[in-house]
Structures are given as C-alpha cells and as structure tokens.
Image (tube, one colour):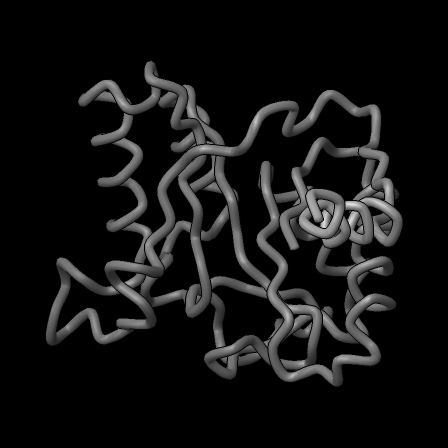
Length: 191
C-alpha cells in the first residue's frame, strides 16, 4: 500500500528529462528585476497618460527608483521592457526599432542609462511574426534581431510564444538561441 503513493513520483522521475545549462556564467541564480507588464501592460498613449505609457521616461524612472531605493543592492538587477516598445514597422534594413515618439533616444541610449545605474536592461520579443500585442516579432529575423539586441547593449531577452504554431515553437526558440550565441554578447535568454 505504501508503494502506491510513490508510483506517481517514480513515474515522473523516469519520464523527466535532464536539462544541462550552458556553462557561460549567466543566470546562475534566478533573475530578479522589474517588468512593466503587470502594472502598465500595453499603454502606449503618452498624450492621455504620460505617467503610465510605455516609454523611455518610464524605464529611466524605474532605473532611478531601483538604484535609489535599495532594490539594486537587494539583488534586483534587471529593468525589463516588455511588449509594446517597438515601432509597428522595422527600419529599411529590416531591424526592429523602438517607437521614436515614446523612445526618442532609442534602446541603446536607454541601455547606457540603465547600465550607468549599475543595472541591466531586458527587452521583449516573440518567436512568431508578431508579438502578443501585434508588434513585429522575430520570425524570419532571428539573426538580425539577436545582433540588434547585442548592438544595443541588451542584457536579457524575454522571448514569448504568441502568433506561432505550437509545432514550430521549439525550432524558433532554438534558432534564436543560436543567433544570440553567435553575437558573442552575454545575453540571458528567457523563453
């Protein structure tokens, strides 16, 4: 009778896969930081609500708060830009670009500012052609997007799985993983 209770655990043990992390020194502990999504979702109307809209101003403020109020010193090191940061169109070279009205300095300047506070910048993209909120995703642009994030000084990529057939997710996630590694930059990959 006592063995019956162990059967589900034993079955789980036999069917589980061993996952080996990359030995690259990244994310040795769980990442800790701040992401706008739970509080601000996809508010992009800076005219109607400048204090809540997804903008460079919001992330500069959050970096300042994290540094000044002790969050950084407590181990919270990431300021993460979630969905809705991008322009609705890629640039002429096919690269993602931040919405120029809401991020007038661009992502590189934001990353430099966040780094100046002793913090790291995370950014969001999607494995599919579009993000969950309909902005350009990375499908067909994995190498370009990975290099763009590296050029901008991004430290973490949150890679979502919207607008993509489930059967293609694993391949897309693997393609972005390879593309990030090919940049030679240290970018934590959260998917």
